[in-house]
Length: 318
Image (cartoon, rainbow, N blue to C red; front, side, top):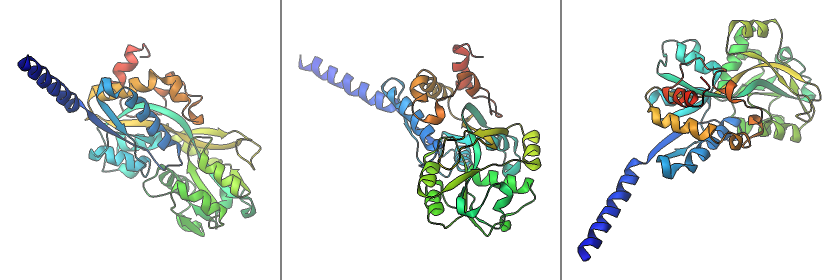
């Protein structure tokens, strides 16, 4: 009897050891804590972790510098997956723009998320009603490593401007910029982000501010020349101080990984999101209008990861 109990105990210990051995930890790169990227990563992890007992996957999604920081971390093998603007997915995979000479050929697309308009918010007392009015003003252009700073540089280049055209070009993180606008340390802030956004709502609740349209010939040419850009509209009435629709341009938030991440890992992450799609859509207002058929193709310029492809084929979407 003792012998049987010993064997049962040993078998139990071995079983629990093998269960621990099968645990795999995945890290998702996000963005600033007030931005939608952080919510995307946290939401995906929440859904993945609900099935941890079954899949062995445990997911964390720390705050990071944003798109470019995430892509570089995935390329270096420091992170498994991450959120990135569609333009930086394109440039990294094709070795263009900031990725010239540093191509990330192993980058793989997983799915697209929400649209992200390039958004300019200005203090009312700064009298900024168009992008041209930013010349000579104090502007927060975005933190190093973020997609918004890189996109701002693209816009300046298209308009034949430089950072020196601003009285101040500060590089505050998203979490710091609303307070800077309210404290009159800057006249305007730039944010490439999904809407509605908490940081912008905070900014317009602490100071009279308005959203600024970003349009004109240079922007039209940017959209025409680059498949990852599109005209975007921020609905009027979404934020205090801006009653009319505001026209700008934008990108998509996309979820990316590396070819080095195993097929079954990506498959389980994708399955966790799309098997619980209604739950996912409720996790942030920017997700409310998401459609599965758009998410598996829009803004994706790198090849689909085989794990994602397998799931989409199983669902009959491809």
